[in-house]
Amino acid sequence: MKQLVVTTVLAVLGLTQTYAQLPEPGFTIDERTAIVITDPQNDFLSPDGVAWGAVGESVKENNTIDNIETLFKLGEKYDIPVFISPHYYYKHDHTWKFEGVLEKLMHDISMFDRGDQLNVEGFEGSGADWLPRYKKYIEKDRVVVTSPHKVFGSESNDLALQLRKQGIDKVILGGMSGNLCAESHMRELIENGFEVAVVGDATASAKLPGLDGNQAAQTNYKMVASKVFTTKELVKEFKSK
Image (cartoon, rainbow, N blue to C red):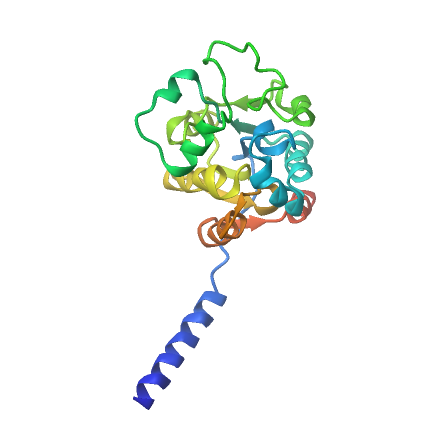
């Protein structure tokens, strides 16, 4: 029995050491690199947004609003293409016959609601609209706004197509929310052959009783992406180019 305990302890220690030495693939910014930002919208990032009660604490802790703006500024300064993957729900989306937990919550609180894809009545200033301080970046011709994703990942929109058509195969990813849309985009892009770095503090996630979305997201970024930058590290990386 004593030998079994010793062997188990040694195995655990060895496993811990292996995890502590996770490889660092790295990420090199070049002419095939784009910045992708998910859901830079009022319902997530404005104190008046319907999700602010759940994500606001994490947004403040990560300085997410300023850090996402830094991504826009870096795109302009260094001529890096920027792609926005928004989240919209149209009237017909509310007739779905089944939903996951967070889908149901978003539908119940009318998150990201719009009339339909051809109707922008009431869109200006709504929860689905861009955070006002980002509009001066997003409304320029150099920024591509993709079709909306509908659950969390980019499987249901044309993000991958838009990236491929511009010769992009490397993505610097940030946006909302960290453990849902941003993480799902990371996973889908990687599965589609893109190299992905995540800017961990340019995201934020819901904190609910017994659930810490930000902790979950940051753990998974570290274990899945090629590189996890802080915003300051990314700025430094660009300056060193």
